[in-house]
Length: 196
Ligand code: GAR
Image 1 (cartoon, rainbow, N blue to C red):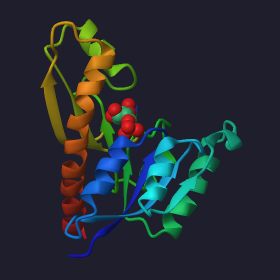
Image 2: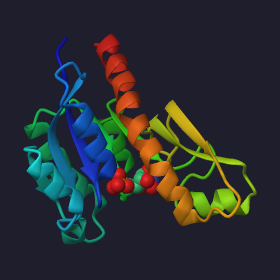
Image 3: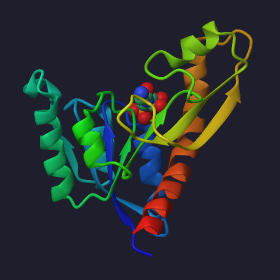
């Protein structure tokens, strides 16, 4: 089996990225990380990736002002130069234009900290608490032009406990995300390989 060349896009801490890199140390894992790219040059995750021996790149979106597509064309260039075949968004906090999403359609997945279709966008945990939900969770989905709107690949949930806050919920959910993402990415790779 050939491993798909994987880019992980981050904006900050990169703990989900780390979980994927860890899983991909197994030569039988279906994706091979070739690039970690951040829109923030100070993203902590870039250091973690470099320490793990993965090529990194920073493309500062601020340099491009309001021209989102110019920023994305710069990313696209790096991604194609690295021969990337699948992209995992892991805490990448830029909304992508239809141009970029369509260019990578069927080859780009995202993790979102809610049980989609509930709570697209930001403040997912506070919104789950405010709604009186009894469970929260996370979703890995294909990226489509609508925000947090693509076909669901896999979800994981956990109970909301009395006294939970948005912070406590986020902290309890994080290890759940770390288990879900590498597994869901395996499924995504299998789907791409089936199509090929
Ligand atoms: C994760 O909780 C991820 O689900 C969320 O950001 C965090 C990134 O943490 N993503 C989104 O909110 C996307 N809309 P990490 O940098 O440690 O992986």
